[in-house]
Image (spheres, rainbow, N blue to C red):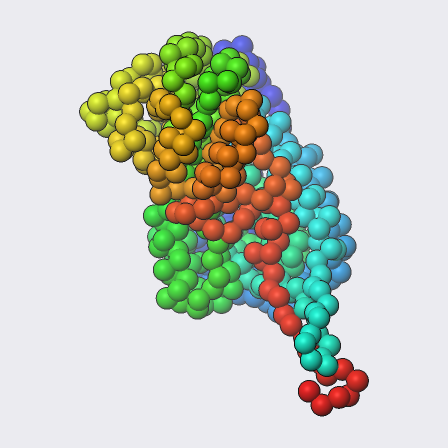
Length: 499
Ligand code: ADP
């Protein structure tokens, strides 16, 4: 990948889009219908490439390939250490292409190039390595039976998996799903989001180069109600792993139930609280909350989008938060001095602006931001509301944009009650130096992950997934392997005694 001097004093990579077709049974192929769809650059709204548009017929072909690879191919049968070696090679290839991959996610999703280069892409490779190391440690247990029987369990791959992923973290979501499923010995069909298909297709190419056998990993870009729905209702898919909106999660679960009762895991929306107590260092807390709200332009399911600040430091916190938000540099995500790029597409951009409007109409006070900040592209100013009430739409619904809602509280009990006043339960943040407060809040807030004096502290070994309407089933950690494994019990009489 050559780099050219950008007009504005920073380097914009010259990017060639190499992979635009579906990846089925180890080959890049056109869609059966011959149809294609556009993927656009959110910096300008211009078309980057036309991508083959997968639909039911293509999903059928991909599932057929995955089924054959599962039923008769080497992948589920080879020793775990052999799968692990291939996954390590895949990870090394990802690292070798870090700049090109980060650039693909930047032009497709508007993500900061530096962030992709330093976090998303190496993080994806590290997830592969984590599960590569687990692939030869998958085993059942010997059971202690109550009668003269000998029994043990086997852990077996669940079969053909359908992964449906969203657009906000194209690389991270891809590896959240495929890494444990590959390590477990499953075969799969992945549908990337229609907004961001580019890096997934590149990963297919690298997987083949690493030696993953044909048919094990198939990629079918396309739209939700067509390609996605075909996966959810397919009779020959054994498991579906989905990350996206709560609304679509419900549709997918229904389709799974109405077809072959495939097992389902869902990582859905969030409205994550961050609770800042009076004893916090105000500057540290302001920085943490700024990061929790605005990272990836707020397009994160775990974004800290309800900020509860204790009354003693509330005024100072609000003042400093506004100052910091105003310093944020919004602009071209290739520019290393920029903190915030464009929203992923026009729909998302309009949705965020609509929520800002609703916030104003419902009586919240807009302290800063609230407007688009570029002639072209989908840029929105970092926005802060105060006087937000618990029942306002901006305090209850997932905005998925750079919008901070600040609220005041008095006691620990009140903070817990407010934090739990949501249908979601994905993540929560706590900022305090008091260990009792920390312990009480960590155990009382109903969310899948609690970050104390930190935020977005993800790690391959830390299971991640929601409570309540944020879904069920974990990504990451050894827990995620379980999603892709069946437990089989084998029983035999002991000592030839009658049982
Ligand atoms: P977001 O709100 O983040 O765009 P969605 O839930 O709409 O999230 O989309 C997440 C993923 O689900 C995407 O890959 C999208 O194409 C897919 N999807 C959307 N609608 C459906 C559907 N009816 N059935 C299956 N997948 C769908």
